[in-house]
Image (cartoon, rainbow, N blue to C red; front, side, top):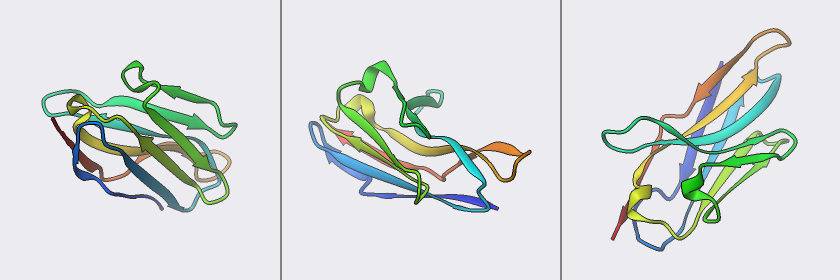
Length: 121
């Protein structure tokens, strides 16, 4: 069984502020392909924020490029999202995601329970 446990100072933050989110993947993990963060704002669909693969290659949503940074610890199965220069439009529930193999043959997408980040103007 795989669990993604999110941590970090979510909650209320002022516009222009910074927040770091962390996600730890635990359980029966053979290999993690990608780890990333998605977000869902009220009334909107869930969208990709940032993703990183095992080789360190990253991809970001255009709206966060230059402000957010994703980093991964392959040994600890941990991913961090550093969010700087936050804007009210960044307000959303942020979900950790991992695409991983639990053995050589079986893989799937796993999700954290979500962390609310509320940016006030």
